[in-house]
Amino acid sequence: MAKLREELPWQSVRAFIQPLIDLFRDAIQLGKDREKLGPAKFHEVYERIIDRFDGLMLGTRSRHPDCVRIRKRLSKHCDELFTFLDDPAVPADHNGTERDIRSLAAARSDGGTHRADWSAAAFARLKSVIVTGMKNRVRFIRYGIEVVRAKLRGERLPLPFVATPDTS
Image (cartoon, rainbow, N blue to C red; front, side, top):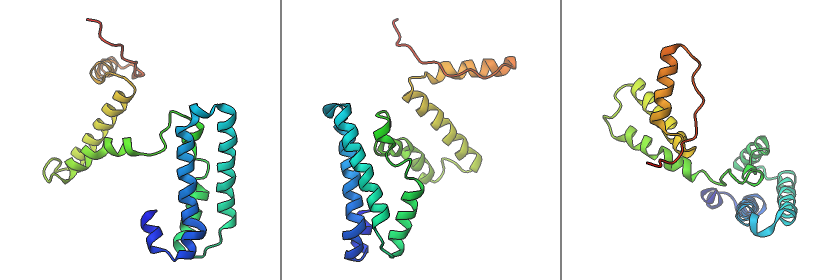
């Protein structure tokens, strides 16, 4: 949005883009302050943020194509925008996900790691399974062995189990 702020006419920035940036900064800060505020105060501030968002969506009439595009997209996904406030386990940003896929991008640009589409697709799927397992404390090797065994026996694939710390 910072780039948009530089490229758009100042009227659009003042009326729509900057208030939108401020709104999301306040929402992110609210998520960080959740515990400190307590449930009642958190809910009160949360409602004010939603009211501000609704006011921006309804009250801004910029006809600049970028503002119209952004307003349409935000309206389409409005139920998902503040998920990080509804569920404290959901991060407000996607930095972790970007870090997770960094190695995929590096492998792709390596220029020789994946010479075939099937190889790149297999690597991406495997990386996704491993990283998801790590985030959920599922040991990939143990789970992989159970999947292979179930497959060989013609059984349903097992649900992942949560790893327990080694005590040995």
